[in-house]
Image (cartoon, rainbow, N blue to C red; front, side):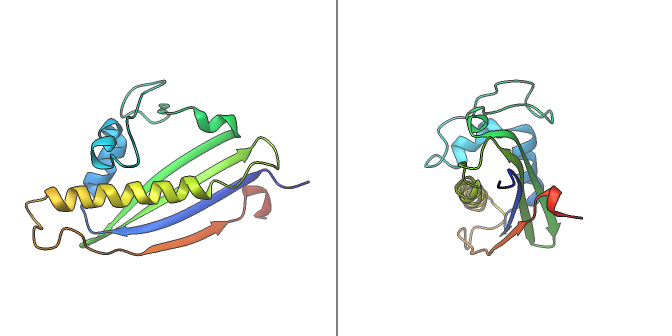
Length: 146
C-alpha cells in the first residue's frame, strides 16, 4: 500500500519586495486576482477572517485530500527574496496524484505578483520583467523521516 502522506517544497526567487509579497498573502489574498487575472478570477473567504491564520479561502482541494496545509515563507536577503511554498498533505487514496500541478500554479501566481509589483513600482521602472530562478525539492513524508 502506498504512503498517502507527503510534503512538497518548491522555491522561487523574486526581485519584488518580499514584505509586500508576504503582506498580500497574509492580509489581502482577495487582491491576488487583480495581480494574476489569467490564473485567478476571484478569491472568496469560506471560513474565518482575512489575515487570520487558519482561515479557509477554498474548499475543492479537500475532495482529493484528507488534509492539506499550504505554507508560504518569504526569506528577504538584499534585493533578492526567496519564496518557499510548502505543501503538507494526506491523500484520500492512492489514486490521488501528488499536487505537482497545484505547486506549478502557485509558482506562476508568485511570478504574476512579482511582475505586477515590478511594473507598478516607482522604485524600479527600468526593467519590470526581471528573470528569476526556480528550485525544486521533494521531501519525504513525515512517516519516512526517522
